[in-house]
Length: 73
Image (cartoon, rainbow, N blue to C red):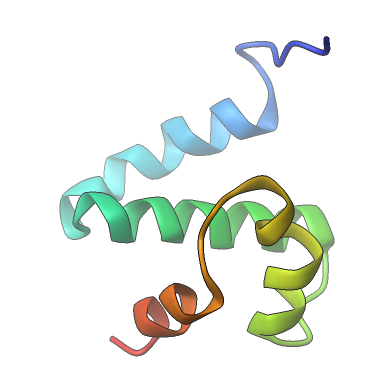
């Protein structure tokens, strides 16, 4: 099993974004975190569906509609 160190990009990004958590509700912060992480990992954004299909769907149980709903605000 591969363990993720405390200095990984995932942990570093979460610590950095945690400063902005007061702006979001818990669920929307989690979606925001996954969107930013997927943009950094894929290094390209063709569409939200592209991000969802190639990254978010593989690692979470988030739905595509929840991403669209989050971005509609």
